[in-house]
Image (cartoon, rainbow, N blue to C red):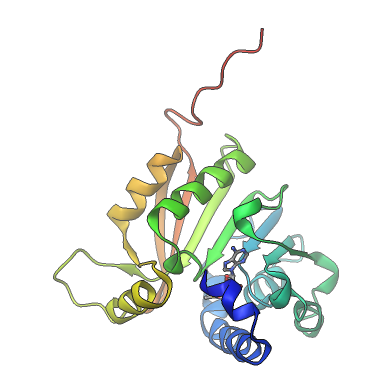
Length: 220
Ligand SMILES: C[S@@+](CC[C@H](N)C(=O)[O-])C[C@H]1O[C@@H](n2cnc3c(N)ncnc32)[C@H](O)[C@@H]1O
Protein backbone atom coordinates (compact mmCIF):
# COMPACT_ATOMS: atom_id res chain seq x y z
CA UNK A 1 0.00 0.00 0.00
CA UNK A 2 1.38 3.38 -1.08
CA UNK A 3 1.30 5.04 2.38
CA UNK A 4 3.24 2.21 4.01
CA UNK A 5 5.81 2.48 1.19
CA UNK A 6 6.12 6.24 1.74
CA UNK A 7 6.81 5.57 5.43
CA UNK A 8 9.95 3.62 4.47
CA UNK A 9 11.53 6.68 2.82
CA UNK A 10 11.98 9.37 5.49
CA UNK A 11 12.80 12.22 3.08
CA UNK A 12 9.88 11.41 0.81
CA UNK A 13 7.56 11.05 3.76
CA UNK A 14 8.70 14.38 5.25
CA UNK A 15 8.07 16.23 2.00
CA UNK A 16 4.73 14.45 1.37
CA UNK A 17 3.49 15.26 4.88
CA UNK A 18 4.71 18.85 4.60
CA UNK A 19 2.86 19.21 1.28
CA UNK A 20 -0.32 17.80 2.85
CA UNK A 21 -0.07 20.25 5.75
CA UNK A 22 0.40 23.20 3.37
CA UNK A 23 -2.47 22.27 1.08
CA UNK A 24 -4.70 21.36 4.04
CA UNK A 25 -4.33 24.97 5.21
CA UNK A 26 -6.30 26.09 2.17
CA UNK A 27 -9.31 23.84 2.70
CA UNK A 28 -9.10 23.62 6.52
CA UNK A 29 -10.14 27.21 7.15
CA UNK A 30 -13.25 27.04 4.98
CA UNK A 31 -14.26 23.60 6.32
CA UNK A 32 -13.82 24.84 9.90
CA UNK A 33 -15.73 28.06 9.10
CA UNK A 34 -18.66 26.59 7.19
CA UNK A 35 -19.05 23.13 8.74
CA UNK A 36 -21.59 22.88 11.56
CA UNK A 37 -19.23 21.43 14.19
CA UNK A 38 -20.85 23.14 17.20
CA UNK A 39 -23.33 20.23 17.58
CA UNK A 40 -20.60 17.66 18.35
CA UNK A 41 -18.58 16.94 21.49
CA UNK A 42 -15.65 14.99 19.96
CA UNK A 43 -14.53 15.05 16.33
CA UNK A 44 -12.06 12.37 15.20
CA UNK A 45 -10.02 13.29 12.12
CA UNK A 46 -8.97 9.96 10.60
CA UNK A 47 -5.92 10.07 8.32
CA UNK A 48 -5.70 13.63 9.59
CA UNK A 49 -2.02 14.14 8.79
CA UNK A 50 -0.22 16.42 11.23
CA UNK A 51 -3.48 17.91 12.50
CA UNK A 52 -3.96 21.08 10.47
CA UNK A 53 -7.69 20.52 9.94
CA UNK A 54 -8.69 19.17 13.36
CA UNK A 55 -6.57 21.94 14.89
CA UNK A 56 -8.50 24.62 12.98
CA UNK A 57 -11.87 23.06 13.86
CA UNK A 58 -11.14 22.76 17.59
CA UNK A 59 -9.63 26.26 17.67
CA UNK A 60 -12.95 27.73 16.46
CA UNK A 61 -15.08 25.70 18.91
CA UNK A 62 -13.78 25.97 22.49
CA UNK A 63 -16.17 23.28 23.81
CA UNK A 64 -14.94 20.70 21.29
CA UNK A 65 -12.41 17.93 21.78
CA UNK A 66 -10.53 16.39 18.89
CA UNK A 67 -8.86 13.10 18.09
CA UNK A 68 -6.15 13.03 15.46
CA UNK A 69 -5.48 9.57 14.03
CA UNK A 70 -2.83 8.71 11.43
CA UNK A 71 0.14 6.44 10.84
CA UNK A 72 2.96 6.84 13.40
CA UNK A 73 5.49 8.41 10.99
CA UNK A 74 2.93 11.20 10.36
CA UNK A 75 1.59 11.83 13.87
CA UNK A 76 5.08 12.21 15.36
CA UNK A 77 5.11 15.80 14.02
CA UNK A 78 1.56 16.62 15.14
CA UNK A 79 2.13 17.82 18.73
CA UNK A 80 4.25 20.74 17.52
CA UNK A 81 1.68 21.85 14.97
CA UNK A 82 -1.23 21.49 17.41
CA UNK A 83 0.71 23.49 20.00
CA UNK A 84 1.29 26.25 17.45
CA UNK A 85 -2.50 26.42 16.96
CA UNK A 86 -2.98 26.56 20.74
CA UNK A 87 -5.09 23.37 20.93
CA UNK A 88 -2.61 20.67 22.00
CA UNK A 89 -4.52 20.17 25.27
CA UNK A 90 -7.82 19.46 23.47
CA UNK A 91 -6.63 17.15 20.69
CA UNK A 92 -5.62 13.58 21.52
CA UNK A 93 -3.05 12.29 19.06
CA UNK A 94 -3.38 8.58 18.30
CA UNK A 95 -1.16 6.54 16.00
CA UNK A 96 -2.33 3.50 14.13
CA UNK A 97 -3.53 1.94 10.94
CA UNK A 98 -7.23 2.39 10.28
CA UNK A 99 -7.46 -1.06 8.69
CA UNK A 100 -6.81 -2.42 12.20
CA UNK A 101 -9.55 -0.35 13.86
CA UNK A 102 -10.67 3.17 14.56
CA UNK A 103 -10.41 5.20 17.76
CA UNK A 104 -13.56 4.98 19.88
CA UNK A 105 -15.58 7.70 21.52
CA UNK A 106 -16.17 10.35 18.86
CA UNK A 107 -19.59 11.54 17.73
CA UNK A 108 -18.20 12.76 14.39
CA UNK A 109 -15.70 10.87 12.23
CA UNK A 110 -14.05 13.08 9.63
CA UNK A 111 -12.06 11.88 6.61
CA UNK A 112 -10.41 14.74 4.68
CA UNK A 113 -8.78 13.73 1.39
CA UNK A 114 -8.45 10.11 2.51
CA UNK A 115 -10.96 7.95 0.62
CA UNK A 116 -9.80 9.03 -2.85
CA UNK A 117 -6.79 6.75 -2.45
CA UNK A 118 -8.87 3.79 -1.30
CA UNK A 119 -10.75 1.30 -3.49
CA UNK A 120 -14.50 0.70 -3.10
CA UNK A 121 -14.16 -2.58 -1.23
CA UNK A 122 -11.87 -1.05 1.40
CA UNK A 123 -14.05 2.05 1.70
CA UNK A 124 -17.09 -0.18 2.34
CA UNK A 125 -15.18 -2.05 5.08
CA UNK A 126 -14.15 1.24 6.73
CA UNK A 127 -17.72 2.55 6.57
CA UNK A 128 -18.88 -0.58 8.42
CA UNK A 129 -16.25 0.06 11.10
CA UNK A 130 -17.48 3.64 11.48
CA UNK A 131 -21.06 2.45 11.84
CA UNK A 132 -19.94 -0.03 14.48
CA UNK A 133 -18.25 2.84 16.39
CA UNK A 134 -21.14 5.30 16.25
CA UNK A 135 -23.87 2.67 16.58
CA UNK A 136 -27.30 4.14 15.96
CA UNK A 137 -26.82 7.44 17.84
CA UNK A 138 -29.05 9.72 15.76
CA UNK A 139 -26.83 12.80 16.10
CA UNK A 140 -23.54 11.00 15.22
CA UNK A 141 -22.09 11.75 11.82
CA UNK A 142 -19.58 10.58 9.26
CA UNK A 143 -18.09 13.58 7.43
CA UNK A 144 -16.25 12.96 4.16
CA UNK A 145 -14.38 15.99 2.82
CA UNK A 146 -13.06 15.58 -0.70
CA UNK A 147 -14.00 16.59 -4.24
CA UNK A 148 -17.31 15.03 -5.29
CA UNK A 149 -17.46 14.41 -9.04
CA UNK A 150 -20.47 15.44 -11.14
CA UNK A 151 -22.20 12.72 -13.16
CA UNK A 152 -20.21 11.36 -16.14
CA UNK A 153 -19.65 13.56 -19.22
CA UNK A 154 -19.59 16.81 -17.25
CA UNK A 155 -16.35 18.71 -16.78
CA UNK A 156 -14.91 19.08 -13.28
CA UNK A 157 -11.36 20.20 -12.36
CA UNK A 158 -11.00 17.15 -10.10
CA UNK A 159 -11.31 14.68 -12.99
CA UNK A 160 -7.51 14.82 -13.24
CA UNK A 161 -7.18 14.07 -9.53
CA UNK A 162 -9.50 11.10 -10.12
CA UNK A 163 -7.05 9.68 -12.68
CA UNK A 164 -4.12 10.44 -10.35
CA UNK A 165 -5.83 8.50 -7.53
CA UNK A 166 -6.50 5.56 -9.83
CA UNK A 167 -2.93 5.36 -11.19
CA UNK A 168 -0.98 6.04 -8.01
CA UNK A 169 -3.19 4.49 -5.34
CA UNK A 170 -5.75 2.22 -7.00
CA UNK A 171 -8.50 4.48 -5.63
CA UNK A 172 -10.87 6.99 -7.23
CA UNK A 173 -12.99 10.04 -6.61
CA UNK A 174 -16.73 9.46 -6.48
CA UNK A 175 -20.06 11.00 -7.43
CA UNK A 176 -22.83 11.63 -4.91
CA UNK A 177 -24.62 8.56 -6.32
CA UNK A 178 -21.47 6.43 -5.77
CA UNK A 179 -21.35 7.59 -2.15
CA UNK A 180 -25.03 6.83 -1.55
CA UNK A 181 -24.49 3.28 -2.79
CA UNK A 182 -21.37 2.74 -0.64
CA UNK A 183 -23.03 4.21 2.46
CA UNK A 184 -26.02 1.90 2.06
CA UNK A 185 -23.75 -1.17 2.13
CA UNK A 186 -22.71 -0.14 5.65
CA UNK A 187 -26.16 0.78 7.01
CA UNK A 188 -25.41 4.50 6.73
CA UNK A 189 -27.44 7.11 4.88
CA UNK A 190 -26.63 10.28 2.99
CA UNK A 191 -27.71 13.51 4.70
CA UNK A 192 -26.30 16.41 2.67
CA UNK A 193 -23.35 17.91 0.85
CA UNK A 194 -21.80 21.30 1.54
CA UNK A 195 -19.38 22.87 -0.92
CA UNK A 196 -16.85 24.55 1.37
CA UNK A 197 -14.75 25.87 -1.52
CA UNK A 198 -14.80 25.29 -5.29
CA UNK A 199 -12.55 22.20 -4.95
CA UNK A 200 -13.88 20.73 -1.73
CA UNK A 201 -17.21 19.24 -0.67
CA UNK A 202 -18.13 17.92 2.74
CA UNK A 203 -20.56 15.02 2.56
CA UNK A 204 -22.49 14.21 5.71
CA UNK A 205 -23.89 10.77 6.53
CA UNK A 206 -25.58 9.24 9.58
CA UNK A 207 -26.78 5.83 10.76
CA UNK A 208 -29.64 4.80 8.49
CA UNK A 209 -33.02 5.57 10.00
CA UNK A 210 -34.44 2.47 8.33
CA UNK A 211 -32.54 -0.78 8.54
CA UNK A 212 -29.56 0.30 10.68
CA UNK A 213 -26.81 -2.17 11.54
CA UNK A 214 -27.15 -5.68 10.14
CA UNK A 215 -29.18 -7.81 12.60
CA UNK A 216 -27.13 -9.59 15.31
CA UNK A 217 -28.13 -13.04 16.57
CA UNK A 218 -30.26 -12.82 19.73
CA UNK A 219 -28.44 -13.47 23.02
CA UNK A 220 -30.14 -16.47 24.72
C1 LIG B 1 -3.84 12.61 1.24
S1 LIG B 1 -3.29 12.53 2.89
C2 LIG B 1 -4.42 13.66 3.68
C3 LIG B 1 -3.97 14.11 5.03
C4 LIG B 1 -4.93 15.08 5.72
N1 LIG B 1 -6.24 14.48 5.94
C5 LIG B 1 -5.04 16.32 4.86
O1 LIG B 1 -6.02 16.46 4.13
O2 LIG B 1 -4.11 17.11 4.92
C6 LIG B 1 -3.92 10.95 3.46
C7 LIG B 1 -3.57 10.66 4.89
O3 LIG B 1 -4.14 9.41 5.27
C8 LIG B 1 -3.19 8.71 6.05
N2 LIG B 1 -3.44 7.28 5.92
C9 LIG B 1 -3.46 6.57 4.77
N3 LIG B 1 -3.69 5.27 5.03
C10 LIG B 1 -3.83 5.17 6.38
C11 LIG B 1 -4.11 4.08 7.26
N4 LIG B 1 -4.26 2.84 6.78
N5 LIG B 1 -4.22 4.33 8.58
C12 LIG B 1 -4.04 5.58 9.08
N6 LIG B 1 -3.80 6.67 8.28
C13 LIG B 1 -3.68 6.46 6.96
C14 LIG B 1 -1.86 9.08 5.42
O4 LIG B 1 -0.77 8.85 6.29
C15 LIG B 1 -2.07 10.56 5.12
O5 LIG B 1 -1.70 11.39 6.20
